Image 1: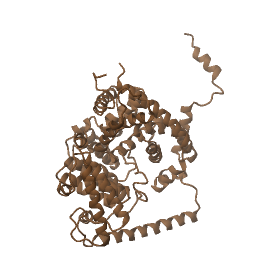
Image 2 (image 1 turned 120 degrees about the horizontal axis):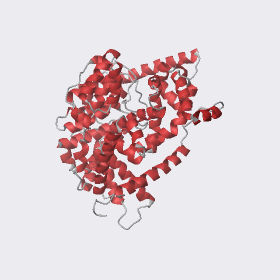
Image 3 (image 1 turned 90 degrees about the horizontal axis):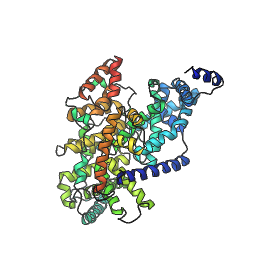
Image 4 (image 1 turned 90 degrees about the vertical axis):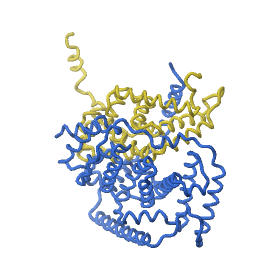
Length: 353
Length: 210
């Protein structure tokens, strides 16, 4: 019997097929862009030398010099940013305006006005949204109850990582490459940065975007007044999530990371912490590289051995394990996740031994 | 039967052109040696199929195009490990599925998915109105994808491959690395949840009210 869902699916299939035809007619496949991206990540040169565009020795030297120059500049900027963050920090943006200063007064005034206006239009909101925010664990994830092995040797840099997160859209993290130097700032200092106030229009834009996003989020979960929001832990977490997303969009990976870390440290809502790790994996890789990402997987597994990403985190560690450890890692994976998403790969890897 | 195949083959064999599968096999072999031309041809040959696959999975043309590129970027260093046990397309689509799963993870927000459902509820066609109005149709499809966002990945993938992309059970199961029976169970569970969500959102009729 055909029901409404079947009708909708038929409609969707027809519409998507038509859209695909139209879209493909307008898209110009760009293999050169693939090669450029692979080269930028150091993939093409390592595994397929002929994929690299032919360049003379002089051009290579020039590129080396340019890369060196860029690395130096980046290092200098990072050092400046780190030094700035060591300075005493002003109060958090959402605190009542106590000691206004210059442009901050104007910014906070606008922020309060926006918050007050939005508070007026908040209405009744569905509860279902946040009930589902924690989502549902996959069957395979629910079966796993062992802690992760946490071996540092498992974080070796192998490329066979189908679970690696894709690049964010350019607008989300423009100008940020995966091979950026590692952040050396202690976590506590990063956390302090979360209290920093916007000092430039671009920063204000990020905060305003986060404000609106937090309002949207709150509007879908029951609403509250602006004053209550400042003291409500759930509202504070929602705001942190919105801030993290806004900063990520703006390319401020360190800012996004610090906010995700604050969410994760919050003991009030483990489900939100679990979710935040999903973003933190990608941000960490973009900001600090693959080795640090693997360390975050291990950290995650220690805290959420049955979490929503446990299956993938465990598999990711096995993919990056040394050849000597990989088979044993996959064997343990199969024990922990007999019906895991990556069991086919695990079985193949175990069999190879 | 007195061996008719031998006769037919004897007639047809000499000038036969390589099949598409044989061409792909040759190209893969060359790509494994790092030949850029072979990779370029593989890219051209598989772009449309991969785009269609990712378009179904993401529901977004811009994201789909971006993820096609990402799939090839990630496929480049892994080509050595392609052993021909599956087709090249299946192998490529497997990489794409992992990329999509991470994409979903990076933007997962059930609240937003439900916000999408609510937005759709506000514009859904009333009873008696034509559901074929383009905007309403677009909104209904958006509601379907919003509902899909609330599903766990394994159910979401099974549903999209089987019910939306319309793949045969065996092919969908192979791409997901599961058995056809397992796929059927997942797709069925996904359908139940999708139906319930869409009915609650007023996008489709509640069971028993039609």
